[in-house]
Length: 116
Length: 115
Image (cartoon, rainbow over all chains, first blue to last red; front, top):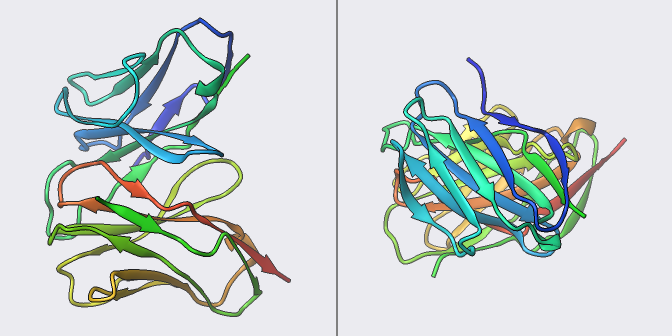
């Protein structure tokens, strides 16, 4: 069973540009969440998509956006990049529904974004 | 408000010994889930173990066990027989409810295993 796949793994962008990151969840999972990890702020929740709808949102500016497709794949976009957006962006996948065995959340390898 | 506290920024353990990583949490919800993840320097967040708030038994997964003390709001991770490959950052996280994908993370504990 394939895990959570994120692309690209590494990228460098210039301040002011925009970036799109992609995430393919585990087969059968309908929930995809995105997190930003920085040395200063730690791991912070960006947003969650479930069945193509944003179900939950963290405290990030509108420059951060996302979407989910009918096959549960998700993309997140950051517009007008700032130096402070340099971070590891992690995607997480889960069934999104209550399960007797627990609704475990699995992460991908992450996308390392550097803004210069 | 939800909060996860990991009070040990760094820890050392001798190979083959057991180690306990501390985690306390704060929530007003009755239904929640607690997770532990391992993050090596490559960045990948590896799921280790899960404990639901209504689970009566402490969770175990191979060498990992979770010491869940609900009244004290603690969920400590115990790693038995430490291996060199266990050296990594360890994060405790909490989800309120049982469905969503939103986790609140602690600041992490860096574990170093000595040969």
